[in-house]
Image (tube, rainbow, N blue to C red; front, side, top):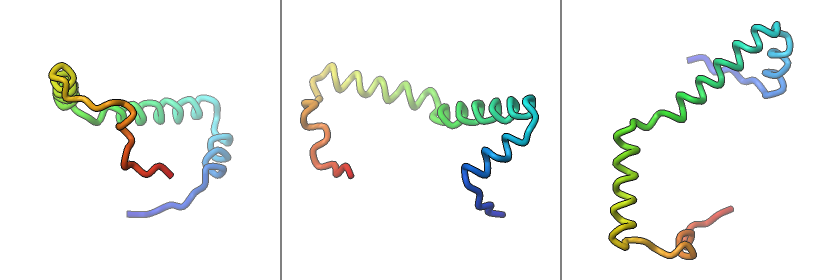
Amino acid sequence: MLTLQITKDQVFTLIDQLSLNEQQEVLQYLVEKNREDLDDTPDDIVIEGIRQGLKEAMSGQTIPLSQMWEGIDVE
């Protein structure tokens, strides 16, 4: 696989050289690609996670919000 090293500035320069129509096509591609990445988790897995969380909340299996971040190192 070929690896191409390119900076954001180089990408923007290349996009600026495109016609307005081509720029819109690139933008549309990026929007669609981003949407695909956000939707990678299958619906049944998402629904099961929601069910599990609701079940835990309804049965009192919760922790106080103040304890949620204990032990997590944020740098």
